[in-house]
Amino acid sequence: MKRLSLVCFILLAILCPRFVIAAGPPDVGYYQRPDCTTLNGVAYGTTCLNTGSGGTLLQGAYYVWSGTAWIGPYPSFTEDATNLNFNKPPIFGNCATNCLTEDFSAVTGAKTLYYPNHTGYVPTSPNARKVVQVELVDATTDVTTGNGKAYFRVPSNLAGMNLVAVKSNVVTAGTTGLTSVQITRCAAATSGNICSGTTASMLTTVVSIDSGENSSSDAASAVAIDTSNDDVADGQILRFDVTAVQTTASKGLVVSLEFELP
Image (cartoon, rainbow, N blue to C red; front, side):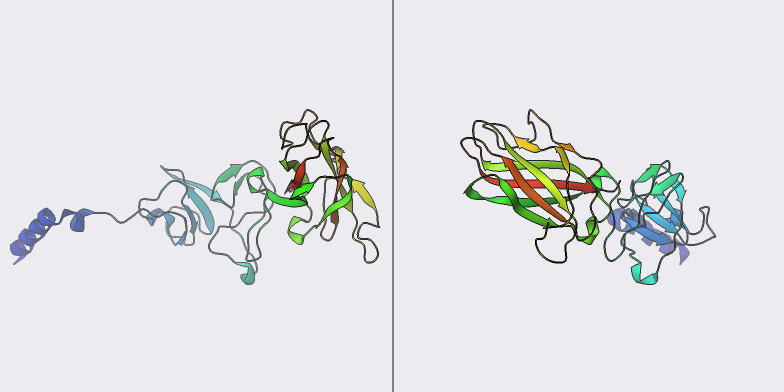
């Protein structure tokens, strides 16, 4: 009977080799396992929380697969159960040596990081900047000078961040001279004009578009941000002021702002 079973197995392997010898697909993404080393053929960048103490890895720590070995340990964490998000690993605060970021990559050296939860997370690197685009003038209208061409209320998810980049575009290029914009930060006002309180110019050199062009990206006079007035807080108002227009006015005007943590 044993010989017959062996013969049947051999025949099955010959007739249906994939059924018998094929391995399962590699484990890719984020996992929790009592022993992360049991993951099947892990792909590069696979992240695992080692929940058990019986394997070779540290219990309660995170590890990242480098392609040849598990790299870690990265710190464990605790947080309120209502904030748990098992779709992403945490991003740890004030890492002294090794940290695990929101995209499962590892960073070394001291760094202040934050963790994601069900309400979102605070980005900590240029790759995770928050971008806002504001239309000052619609696409078919000539750009004219004046304060308050548009307003933007700073939301809570930008609070504590710094303005780090500003760019502007027009839809139809103007000629002779510049199209320039200043951004004015206004303290939250409870009544009257929305910018009737304390104001500050956020740019030491305004963002400008040169004659015949439709973007500020290669302006002869590059935009410069005032690092003394680059931070924003929840409820503040950003006012967009057009300080100069070309002799033959451009049409349409949009400004994009990029923010990140200091």
